[in-house]
Length: 239
Image 1 (tube, rainbow, N blue to C red):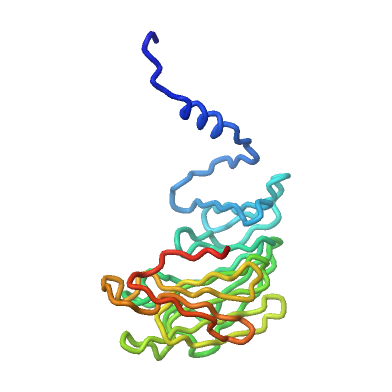
Image 2 (cartoon, one colour; image 1 turned 180 degrees about the vertical axis):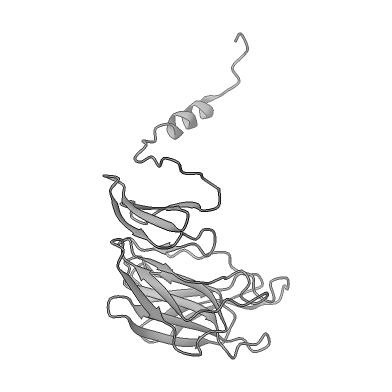
């Protein structure tokens, strides 16, 4: 329009870079950001999950074919629905944000769905939790974990319980009470270790050093290390 173009090399570079993406799948009548709509790329990139209302479709990216329709919606944000690379997913009531304040989230079980729609129910042992904070599944889909406050948990005497199941056998392979506040967890890539950590703890506004994380061996329940810091942890990534 007769004006000087002030855009430099970097603008053109990033424009070309961002516009080289290929559209692999398009969802009609999907209203992003509105209640009742959610989507997720399942780890590995082979499958996607799309929620409309109270049901979730599991689709193949390559073909667009619907493998199954799960009878429940995806959760988003911190306590989002977790998937393995095999397409398995774990579902259940949990909330890590209000683990140590606010109304407790209780439940008696979690559900594991195959990408084909087959369902497994993993029951919590009676008296396991006064609050369920977090659910997760290992990258290979073999292990599912639940983390929450033990019935004996008190602010001045914390006690949080970690449960881990072998999904195929539905055997509870770990039932461990940890003597510290923790409300989130991540499996190691091979599912043999679990990192448990604390975010939004009862002392989050304090600068005092306290336990904010630990690594637990699934097979033995041994704590291989404990992390102390004067601040909580937002997230954990295994390298």
